Structure formats: structure tokens, C-alpha cells
Image 1 (cartoon, rainbow, N blue to C red):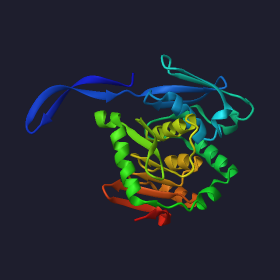
Image 2: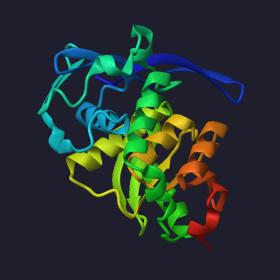
Image 3: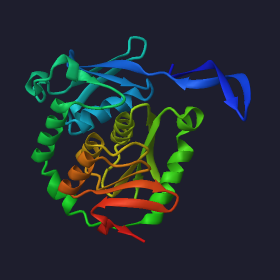
Image 4: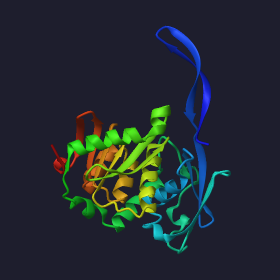
Length: 270
């Protein structure tokens, strides 16, 4: 269960009434990798399989869906068990993560040990070269249109106002994956995981989101080799620095027919 009705009192135009409202329910989900506890993700308990694959991919535990032998989701116990084909490819002890750092909450996202792991994987994959040399072009109207489409597909946001949306689109603005979560970074992980499960290709795609463009969010898109990220919200300095360094086009405040491009504007055409 990820939502429920509650009784509220609403004041509107000097009037007062009792009615019911719908609120979302967040849950802590424990993810085990090769029988060892890896992380505790506080999230909307929906699309957990997609979240699992997206999280493991975005932080660099796996490079492809084929590396995963089995995933078992226990919704009653809020547990996810993942087994890799080659257990020696990733060792939890190598990242030197403390228990408190294993919690991924809905506000701050991943902690420093996870960021270091992602950057190490990006260096190994020479991600800077891959994004810098992507010279694709896209019309601004396509991004405006994609944002509108995402709004129409994020039903939980329209119903509750309590979650974020993220979508991966092709260069024509078609939505390839749309996901929602209380945490903006979880929504991105779910969209990435959904693409992996569909055996989709991140080439010639762009990412749109409702959340702030923090360093964590940008790192996840860089990890998927996505060259353009746009949001209706603001970017943070950490996100801008990473986007510039890796050759990503970062766009904020996409509202109506207006947007602010913070890095590499040459990809966006009028």
C-alpha cells in the first residue's frame, strides 16, 4: 500500500469544511546484495523492481541487467534480495560505508561513499569523453512538450501533490519511461531501471524531472550517459559543476515556454 485516505479540515474563502484527502505512504526498504545488507532506501513502495535495477546501475554496482542473476521483492517484509552472477565483481566492504551512510532518504539522497563509487565507475568508463562528444541537437519546443506529457502521466502527483516525477524521452519528445516517487532521486532510479528492464537504449535520449538538479541527480544521469537533463525546478551548484565537467546540458525552470540553460547550451535550438 502506498497511499491512503485521511480526514482533514480545509479552510477556503472564509469557510471551513471536513473532508477526506489522499496522502502517500513512505516505507524503508532494505536491499540485500548477495545475502549481505547493502542499503536502506526510504521510498514510495511502488515499482520496487525498477528502483532496484536503477539504483544498482546508477551507483555503479552493475553495468548491465545481465549481471543480475535473480531479484526477489518481499513487499510484506519490505526487503529486496539481489544475487549477482559473479559474486566477486562487487564487494560491499570495498566501499568502506558506515551503517548511517547506508540510509538513502527522500530528501538528501545518497551519501559520500556512494558518490565516490559512482565517480570511480564514471572514470573507469571514461564518461567525460562520452558526453563531451555528443553533438546532438534538440528543439526547445520538444522539451517543453515532454514536460507537459510527463505532467499528464504523473497521476500520483496530480492526486496528492506529494511526489516527484521523472521521465526518459527520445529526441522526438516521446516518453520512454515515466516514474514517480517521494524522493526525486528515487524517481530517476526507477525510470533508469525501467529502461534497463525494457532493454532500452540510453543513446539519443534526454531526462526530465520535477526535482531539484543536485549533484546526486546529475551523477545518475551521467552514469546512464544521458547528455541533456531538464527540470521544472532549480539546479544546485553541485549539479551545475558536474554537468559542466562531464559535458552535459543542464536546464532548469522549464515552465511554459521558458527555460534557463546552465551548461552547454549549444545542444538546444530555438
